[in-house]
Picture 1 (cartoon, rainbow, N blue to C red):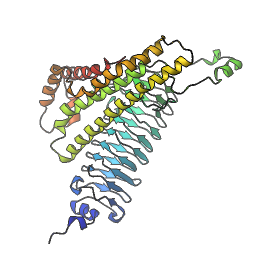
Picture 2 (picture 1 turned 135 degrees about the vertical axis):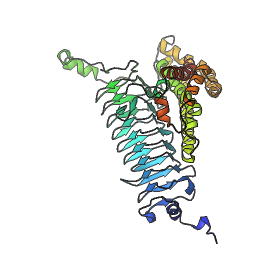
Picture 3 (picture 1 turned 180 degrees about the vertical axis):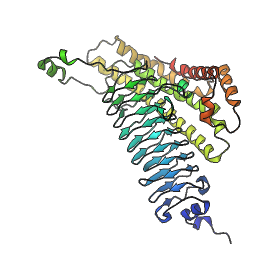
Length: 420
């Protein structure tokens, strides 16, 4: 008589499937986890907890090598190594790695051979292939690209922070480190963000940028080079009295915004790049991820992550727009010139937001430059069967790369042109 699956120990079912459980009695497998979504050869170390009907783990993955892993509704490709920590509603593609102490929350997408060292916190974060984060990092609400291989990769140094919450209590602060139209081609210069530093979102950082350790980036870096923040040479430092005056407190009114044009533009640029990346997955990535059920689960997971990020960014931009009437009232009460540029920009966002919101809601119908897209797709379709995604992209001709970038940029520009 066939044993009722509901009465079986899930760990024993996985063992029978060829999953490696060194101490199965210490591993918790939730009843909503489908055993067929965990590939033979996966290793799950003692103390791990798996749950969620959308959990999928591909061949060669390893969980909990250094500390227990709690994993819920995540999708892992092949050879993903999650060494310890908590992971929820995140997707990791082939060869991704996260060391012990990770705290990975919904909306996170880590692409091939990317990842982080110990004690990294991510949420609504997208890392392109090869991007590596050091230790003790909080890098939420970011997209980062750049680099061509594991030996030539974009890097975020240890003890780095993306500051994504403002004193006005808004989070319209997502930062774009690199971009999608060029970043997906895997041929751009790496970006280096030195340790013990941070980005004050929303900022944009160009490919090839090198930021020295200990630097807080508060402005866009639109030309890749060594970034040297403004500083006063020691020989011309201000007298002590002037220093004291410069550090004195100043009045602050929560909700009283200043110029917002750059903030709105950077939010639209981020949304445009997510829109482009969703199209990239739909048209370019999908054929490489549909034959294998575990890769198919990763495709579904990645698309779900991008949809979450997309909706989150629109939500945060709407919250910013809804704060503008209050900001204008504060400006008026403070006797500010309501015809000055900051107030004009705030009124413009109020007036334009309904149109912007409707346009953002209809982006799925925007195809961009179809001619350029088809040039790219024809080139991708000529690769021999079995070619990996990374190898296929790297083998593209300059003409196909240029066409693909032009197509994706046309999608970004559709959103960028909505700015106030």
